[in-house]
Amino acid sequence: MHLNVTSSVKHIEQVRILLLDKPCHILSINESRLSENIDDGFAKIDGYDIYQVDRNREGGGVAFYVKTSINSCLRNDLIPCGLEAICLEIKRAKSKPFFVITWYRPPNS
Image 1 (spheres, rainbow, N blue to C red):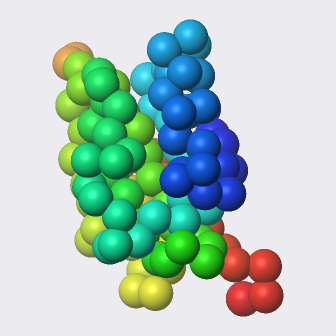
Image 2 (image 1 turned 180 degrees about the horizontal axis):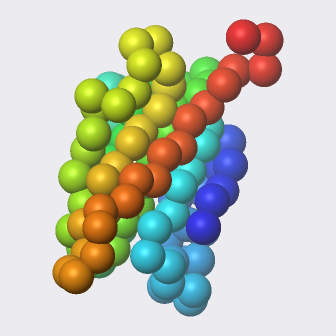
């Protein structure tokens, strides 16, 4: 699932309700607008691991929520320098690993 939330700060409760009502394996979020000034625990959701790349409260930022039962790891080595993105490697039993990527491109870039 993918959402452009235009501020996790404003919509985190709606995201929590969505994931309780319609659980998914992986949720990609663009324009999370989280920053280092926001406590890391703020965006956590029970049952999900969070991966995030913050920019600032004015725009941008990306995040993934991944069910805790899914074996996932961050692959920063696959992201070109300067790209606002997250790449995850997903490993499943008896399957080849696969990658999921989310990125954000500011409108005037």
